[in-house]
Amino acid sequence: MKIKLYVILLAVGGFLSSCSDHVYGPALHHSDMAYMPKPMSMDSAKSATYLSGGVVVDFSNNLSDVLTSGQLNISEAHTFQNFNLAYGGFTSLGNYENYDLEKDNPHYFKNKFFGAVGGRLSGNFFTNLDNRTDFRIIGFEAVYSHEFGDYARFRRAVTGDPSFYTDTRTDLFTGGLTSEIVFHGRRPNTQMGFRAFVGKTFGNDNIYNNTNNNYVSYKTPTVVSFAYFLQLKQYFFVVEGGTYVQFRLGVKF
Image (cartoon, helix red, strand yellow):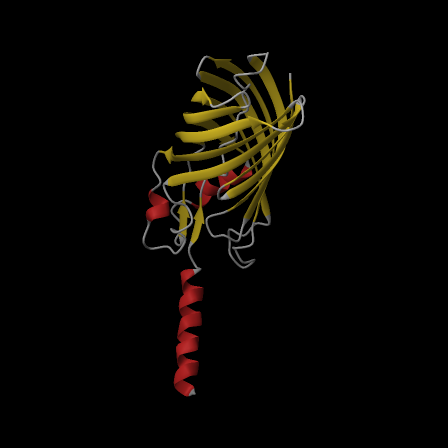
């Protein structure tokens, strides 16, 4: 019994000591992607403007802190023969809520404001399978974002302190490949689509690969996300997820 108790105490001690490391990355790291709608090949209008607002919920590197933000997106999309293209901008305002740092830590905080602005670009090569389905065989997506606010200043302030691993970048560029299928639903003026994205955030991600901390398994170089798109007449809804969850409502002009 004493031996079992000793083993348990050692395991608990090891767990607590491993949690003494604190890893902080950019607010939009691996959550900067957002699905960009585009007209289908059989639509009468081959160009459209999409305006949407949404909520994004993401977990930090330590899996305990939570980032919640509101996002406003606007994009322009054009569909040509067997190719489409969309481009646009966005702004994001949010809150980083701390559950990891204890109150006795000199860097303790309850929450930190963050914001971001940026632009997105997306394109697909597609084939029309029938009169109601576009198979967007392969495509690309890219996003640039610039972060500002209290959380970015906090990362710079704790850089170099023992047990803190920080990524102080405020400018991120993420890009990758997509595959997507979009089809008209049974109801008139209804469209639905599914998209898979695989890519990476370019730049120095060394802190996430540091073998001296225990949070390396969460933020990996590869970004994977999935999206579901639903459009009813001129209104649309998007739910998207990877290491984050995003819900958006919008209107098509």
